[in-house]
Length: 326
Image 1 (tube, rainbow, N blue to C red):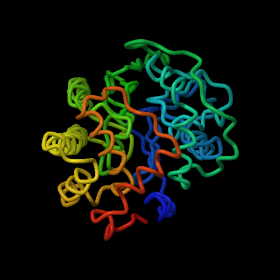
Image 2 (cartoon, rainbow, N blue to C red; image 1 turned 180 degrees about the vertical axis):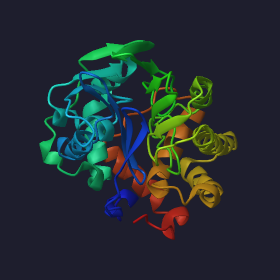
Image 3 (cartoon, helix red, strand yellow; image 1 turned 90 degrees about the vertical axis):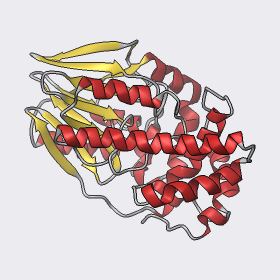
Image 4 (tube, rainbow, N blue to C red; image 1 turned 135 degrees about the horizontal axis):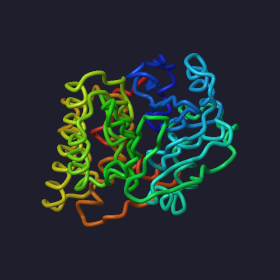
């Protein structure tokens, strides 16, 4: 069996560190997971920690170029290992997550860690520096506010979409949004743990905030209101197109493999050039199939289940001639 598409994706990505406003920065890497940085008068807040403490050191190096202050708080937008396992690289910050995200770490954090590291080795450089699972020191329900001097940063459990615990950080005065994986830009949304039926309403809630600058979960920093709207619309189109197509197959009584082949053929012309398309789609279709058949709570991905799913779906007509992203 060939490995996951992601295991062949070993090319280094160019890092960008863009200023969205005074003291507000986007750490992006050509479609790899992004981090946000908010510099306050007494310390720095990081939104999403990167995958390993070793990789967090590059975020810290960028912060040091603009501020000597320590990282005092880390906000986790959701529970996925690639976002949270780097926390130890920042010292001993306060770690903030939604109640739902903490519950998911309790339920499936260890399995998710093993699954993600096995799937995407380049994104876990320095994995030997990971001390174990990352646990929030503070969790919240609904919304909480961080005050960075006079700057207001709202930490909002915005709604179910990419996961059940999805959280954004919103600076209302500056109209800057740190969106986590609720919104992507030019990158394929990973939907293996998604809630497709809820995702459109979550995007509505994001749009209602009125962001004029945004750090998406993946993709470059968005610097205008129009770009933010484009990213929201693109994420909405991808997730809606995918779920709609899978539901049609379920209604016809098709099996998962038939639906996968059909959905790949339907989605590839429009979205196949997006980063990590080949990697995400088997996981995406599998979750969409489960949800369309009535399974609200996503099944846990384990390293073993990953391999079984990939064998069943990737080694068929739809993937035979697929280009592996490099």
